[in-house]
Structure formats: structure tokens, C-alpha cells
Amino acid sequence: MRLRPFALSVVAVSALLLSGCAGAGSDAPSPDASGAADLCAAVADSGAASEAATVTGEVGEPSKLVFDAPLEVADRQVTVVEEGDGDKVEAGDFVSYALTAFNPETGEEIATAGYEPGEMLPAQISADSPLGETFGCSPVGTRVVAAFPKTDDTDAEIYVLDLLSVVPTAAWGEPQEPVAGMPKVTLADDGAPTVTVPEGDLPTETTLATLKEGDGYEVQSGDAVLIQYWGVRWSNGESFDSTWAKGGVPYAQRTTSFVPGFQKALEGYPVGSQVLVVIPPVDGYGEGEINTTDLVGETLIFVVDILGAQHIPAQ
Image (cartoon, rainbow, N blue to C red; front, side):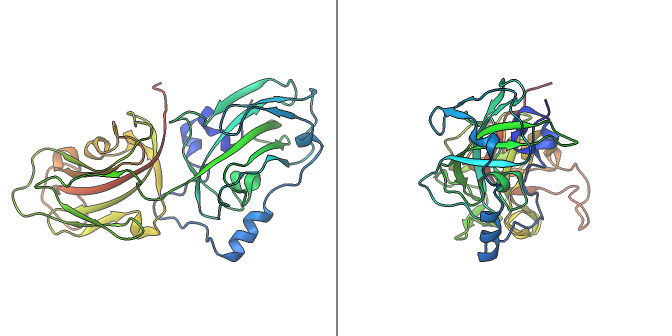
């Protein structure tokens, strides 16, 4: 059974990163009036297949779906089972959601994901994303039954999906006291950091400080994470890379894809945290003469906001 992109916690993580999470440097869908109208209109009409199933269970908890199998799914259909009472989502929002998937041929439950911490990354919603086609501009707390016909790439499927929350694009954890000797960090209203390099000797080991302490799932090695970051060269105090400077769109990737020092600012920290890390060359891009074309020999400073995580079991 091949599941659709929004069910990606039960398939390969490489596909997960295509689920609507924008990467660094990409632009978020515009949340203007026309974008909102497009998002609201993106949802499929209700139909015989999506209306044929009876849902049991509370929103925010795993559900059961009962229907007479086999269930014929002729086209894309969405039926609202319960409309939420939260704010309506907008194009470009990152949302957390959960689902239970069923086989329309047999009625068998295939998978449940997103109801426990660390099971699903937040995803960006737009009119042309799988989530936009399913929830549109629904309010948070909405539950739907969605039926999808067979395609060349996927089997016919039927889901119960819950829209759980809109995820902030900056860390929301409890602010912590500054650590003496570490770079100074100030935050703009949108959460974008400014870093001031301290005077003194270069650190010889990776040094970390928690700026905001989250209360979510604790990131493990190899997990996929959704982050914002701001990177600065110690040598001149200038930023060399930043999601904030590229539209403020969070970036999704596995922890093990980063240099060792950056990994240390992710693994072991709970979602919602903001972490300050100073990375010497040994944990960065290696020793050598500092230059303007790459980061060899450079001591690096990063401010990292951990917005979401999905556990990826070791192979």
C-alpha cells in the first residue's frame, strides 16, 4: 500500500522532505487575500466515498473508521466530520496534523501517525499541497474524512485527518539567562536574531547555551527536524547563511546531515528550544586558512530554533 505525501511518517524520510515543508531559500506561499481564497477553494467536494464512513474517537486522538468494504473511490473527496473552533489556517502556515489511514478495499487500518510527539514534522500548507487539498482554510481542531482515487503512484486510500495546530516559525520556549562569555543575541519582533561576537580568545571546543527551553519532543540522532537558523563568522561578525535572510521559511533536514557542531545544537534538545552554539573548525568545516569563499578554518556561531521533529528509527 503506497500512501500519499501527507502520510509520510510511515514511509521514507527522503519523501517526507517533499511533503510541503519549504527548504532554506524558498519562498512561502503568500498569505494575502487571493492566497487565502485559493486555499479555501482547494478542498475537494464531499462525495459518496467520504460520506460512507462512520468515524469514532475524539479529535486529537487516534480514530476508527467503519465502512462497507470494498469502498469505491472514483475521485478526490473530503467530508468535514467536525469543524474546529480555532483560528483558520492561512496559505504559508506551518501546521501540525495527525492521521489514520485505511485500505478502502478491505477496511483494514494501515497506519496511525501524528498523535504522539515526534511522529510527524509540521508541514507548510498551500492551495497546491496535499494538506491544502484536504483542509483548505479550515480552523484548527477540524477533523475530516478524505478519500483519494488510485493513481499511477499511489493506491486508493481513505483517511481520517485532524488539524491540530499552527506551528510558530520561531522558538517559543521559556527564555533562559544569558551565559557569560557567549555571543550576545537579540531578537527582532518576528524572532530573527542578531549576533554580537564577544571579545576574547577563540573557543577550542564546541560550546552551547540554551536561549529558550522548549517543552516538546526531545530530538534524537538521525531525526528529521524543522528549524530556523542564523549563522555568523566569528572572525568578522558577519552572517554567512540564514533562513531568516531567505524569507524566514523554516528548513527541514535530518540531524546527521549537518556538521558535528551543528548536530550538537539539535540532538538532546526539546522542540520549541532556541540554542546558541559556537563551533570551532574541528567540529565545523576543518582547519585551514580563513578565506571568503568557504568556511574552512572558521569558528562559527549559530542560533538555532527547533520548531518540529520526527523520529527516524535507525536502520
